[in-house]
Length: 332
Ligand code: UT7
Image 1: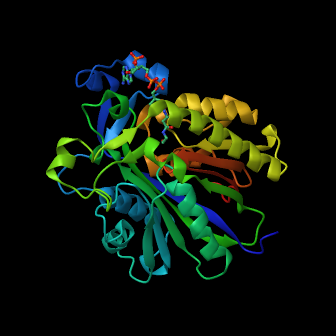
Image 2: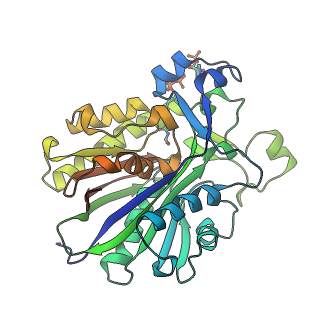
């Protein structure tokens, strides 16, 4: 069905903390090496948020503040803010509420969405519906994670993978032939226990035992997750191309979740697209979970042109995965 009003990204902005944790420093902390990390993941360094009392809302509000400024938007114009995150400041209230308070957004409602590494694409599609129905005119979607707060820096199998970052987009209505054209989102809870945080929720509230057992950190069975990620991200990316009659040459950019360079390469290969058509910044930031995709958009904003065909694809814990087809809405 053709949409009368589409939701278009009209601005993007990111915030990345200053401190850089590189592979050599990690090799002084755990039994690993730059060679292993680069060859298995493609990650060279990641940014880490330092400082007591600074959580996701600190990074996200910096990203949102910059977004409002560069798009000449007053906080009063925003009707809804959604924050995609797995490392919320608190279990409750929602980090989105705290972000709004920090940046002076007072006429909006706001909430968090947690779909692990797919949080941003889930949030973007949820937000787009409020625009497409005509209910709201300016909606902000943030993807932000402080993965360093749930990573065990004595576990070499996970600590090399993740970093901290936030990035935000502004969504507005358009009647032009740009904006979010289509999406496919999926989840499968039977994969939940391959990638999760064992304690801290209602099944296993925090206790001395859970802390001693290190159950408040990311737990990941790398290989099964890798297999699912390669298959599902590639399948859904090809599916959305077919559904929209897009050939490999029609795709200007693939914007993939940055979990592992080998997963990104496999997805691009299945789609039949060249490496030059793929946004890759995993070497600089690692896996920033909810922030990877908007961070790519922010990094590539200057090169993006109105009408460019973008495929956004993600895979994450849950399992969750999906693809979005959008036409870029502006020239910088
Ligand atoms: O974003 C959310 C979704 N998450 C993902 O998509 C992540 C998917 N999984 C992966 O990206 C990969 O499975 C990892 C990067 C996590 C691991 O790579 P792998 O090629 O699957 O390695 P592996 O787990 O099979 O481990 C191979 C070997 C093991 O040693 P042995 O048993 O062969 O002696 C590990 O103990 O590498 C060892 N190893 C390491 N060695 C040096 C694991 N981590 C490290 C390390 N440095 N950091």
